[in-house]
Length: 441
Image 1 (spheres, rainbow, N blue to C red):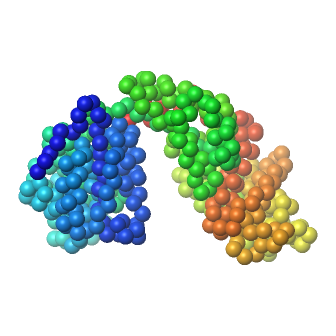
Image 2: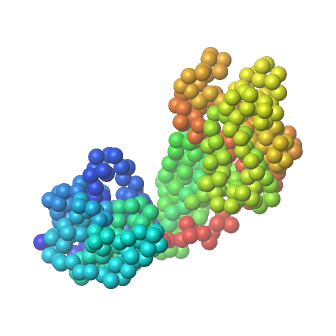
Image 3: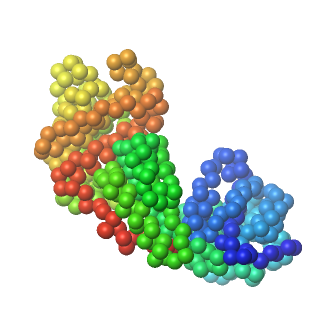
C-alpha cells in the first residue's frame, strides 16, 4: 500500500471527510456532519480537499479508505460504528490496514453505565461496540455507546467517529481538534461572524464593498432574512491574524452600526432575551399567522422565564377579541390583517399580561386567502410599550413556511430595535475581544 508523507514543500495539511451510510448517499439524510467537520477543520488550520460519501457496502468503503489514506494527511470517517448488521466501518478498517480487534474494558464499562442509567439491559450486540482495532487510540464517547477511534502513522491521522451528529460534534470538539492543532504546515486561522438583520444582502454589500480587506469577508444570507458576514483571516501568527481580523470587524461595525445584532454564536432570540434581562423588562406575545413561532424562538433560550410572561395564538377573530381585547369594531372596519388590528393585539396582550412590551403578528401566510388589496404574504407586526405602538408592514411572498419564518424574524428584530431605542446598543467590539471566536483555535 502506498503511504505518502503528509505534505511536501511546506504545504498545509489536507483532509478528506468520508461520510458513511446508505441514508446519506440516497439523500434521505442531509449530510450535516460533513459541513460541521469541514468548518471545525478550517478553525484548526487544516484544509479540506475532498468530501466523500459512500454507502454501507464493504467493497466501496474499502476503495474509499485506500484512496483517502493515499492522498490525505487527515482522514475523518463518520458513521457505521453502531450495533446493527450494516455497521461495518471497523471491520473494513481492520481489513484495509491488516489489524485485528480487541475488547476495550473502558468502552465496555461506559456502555454498561449508559444502559444502566436508562434502566435497560445491555445486549451482546451492544457489547460488540467495545471491540476496537488493535494499535489504535480510543476516544471515549461520553454521549453515546460507540467510541471514536484515532490512528496515526507517518505523520498522518485517521479518525473514525459515530454518525450521530451530537456525538460526532462533541468528539470533534473535545477529542479530534486538540490532536490536530499544531500539525506541520497548519495555518493560523481567525474567524469572526457578524449577524445582520433588516438589510437585504445586495444593499448590505453596496455599503461595505470598499472596505479594506473586503476580500476576507463572505456574505452568507439565510432564508429568514438574516445575513451572516464571515470574516476569515489567515496569517503567520495568532497575533497578526487577530489584529487584521479586528480591524476588518471594526470597519464593518462603523459602516453598519445597529444593523449588526450579534457575533459568532449569537442568535436574534438570544440577543433579544439578553437585552430584556439586562433591562429587567418583560414581554408578552400575540400571534396569528406565525402560530407560536415567535414564542417558540424566545423559549428556545434557557432562562427565558425571566422576561417572557405570556403568549397567545389568536387565529380566529373571536380569539382576538376574547383573549386580546381587540375591539370588534376594529376587526369589522379594517380586517384581521391590518395595521390597526396588529396595534390592538400588541397593546391588548401587553395590558392583559401587565408587561413592559407587547409584540404582535397578523398576516396571510397563504397559499390561499389573499386578495388584490391584501395579497398572500402580507404581514403586519407591532410592538407596544409605555411610549406607544410601532407598526410595520411587510410583504414576504407566497411561500407559507418562509412567510412564517420571516415574520417571526422581523418581530424579534422589531423588539430589539425598540429596546435599543430606550438605552442604546451595549454590544460593541471592545466587549467581544476576548471571546473564543476572536482567537485562533
